[in-house]
Length: 155
Image (cartoon, rainbow, N blue to C red):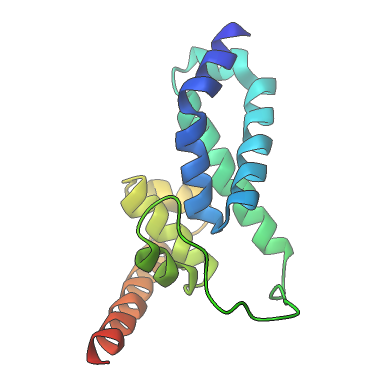
């Protein structure tokens, strides 16, 4: 089990950043990483033999995240709207703000395509959709981000 502890120490921060990109906040990212690592711990002997424990964890994180928003069929409501957003501790705040406004599936497609650099067929397999759906979701997401950027530059 020492190998597992070593893996967690070496890759924990990167997995937390990945979780943050998927979920949009540090608390949900930490929960996602914790659950994925718990599942990896249970499967460690099998996964270690395949030489790709990080791929296993990342795929598990995406699937857990998708499962959570499939269960949620309504928006999360807050009592008051914050006056301003918090600083983004994991990267470009403007980019994250744009991604945050996208529907969850479009955001997941962009994260898997551009952050993870996965091909469309792997993204389709992870998300459980057709390759054409991956391409159309990516195109729609990029269009929304472009439109938002044009409006911001026009101000």
